[in-house]
Image 1 (spheres, rainbow, N blue to C red):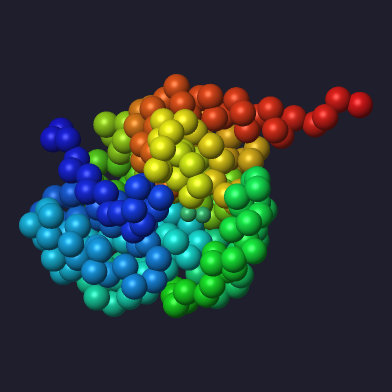
Image 2: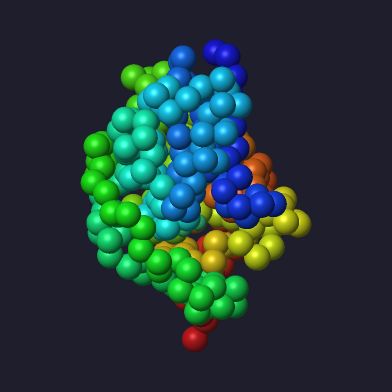
Length: 243
Ligand SMILES: [Zn+2]
Ligand SMILES: [Zn+2]
């Protein structure tokens, strides 16, 4: 198998917010769409692969936060590509405000800005995953699958390629502030996380399935050891305090 070509789309500087283009057959798959008005950045990234909007075969949105789903509607209109997402986050895609459980001080400060609660253009999916069902990407030219990986949000999904590359959205993050900038190899929780125990189980599942290199929405990529350390940290958090 030829190694998949991955183009990182820097939606914010320093790896603070990433989207990804995956070369698939003679086209590409877009994983996350950045904030609203990100079309120019996605166009530039496509051009880097010698492609344009019509070459986009599929748009996968990892979860229903504005920094990942913000340009999904505009992208599907510009490219005609179908949008895939999981029903667990359907209310968020339809305009409901996300549930925000800050994971620390930065999340609480960030919440006060209201930035993540800003609405984005609502949209309906073309391909809707439900429950624990996975979705194979062979029909779109990629050797891999989309897996439900709840935790950060109930409807978070990850893309796992056969070579072990994983696109895990906000299941983990790395770096400082939103991510990136410095200490990129150091895993941490994203600013918001609905269910850390479920996030730990989802990351363990991805490791068990052979995930090797974890590309993240904020910071990253991280290797298996860093992800294992993060799982242990999340499991310690979710353990009930001793009486
Ligand atoms: Zn998120
Ligand atoms: Zn995010």
